[in-house]
Image (cartoon, rainbow, N blue to C red; front, side, top):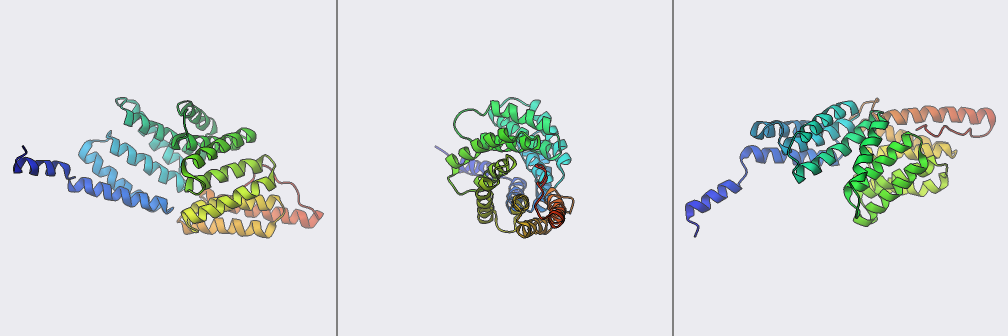
Length: 305
């Protein structure tokens, strides 16, 4: 039978210390900021949480490593892919030296997936493809979040390498996985639809791509909010599609919306979303000039934003 003193001890042991409670609160704040697209603002609470965990448990603790993976995601999404690469490579090096517990194995796979996307954003496409290929080999079986994300990311890498048919195949597999797990309406479904739509567009089937991209934008507005930077990224894709099909006024509106959302999110004009929008506007001006000179729309380069 438990005595009152034993019960009190059990309660004390089960109650987190004020420092742990503070770290958890900071993590929740950062998570909410990231979901809202406020990646720069999410960095400070993550850095504070990491400092607390390091003080309590040391730099190799799983809590530290998990928060560092999330911090790297903020770095990448605000446009600093190389800073994300450096941090994630350090995390993976630490995990490789740790005991092969299941939770650490899973965390390592998450870190590798994030690293692959950072490689992609940094222009290191071969490294990204190798990393994702190794992850895909270990993600066989029923649909899972990990496999669907790996497939989406692999499709994005393959599009950069101009392997458009392979990209479309992987993107459609990812979308099927997301729909099997989440149904027709979810954040990940919207993003995956945009990947399928982009691959379809780059394969030259522009009108087939339109309902996919329009549906992705509409769903992203519902799931993320109209002012989220993800909507800006998808607006760039709609700008490209409308530019390529000669709908210049609509294309301009999409590009300007993407640029405005990037700047509203606190990104600089060098951020990929803002940069793609500005490049798209320049290419649009060239297309308009070419149409005025020749009376027809000149075909764009497949890789242009």
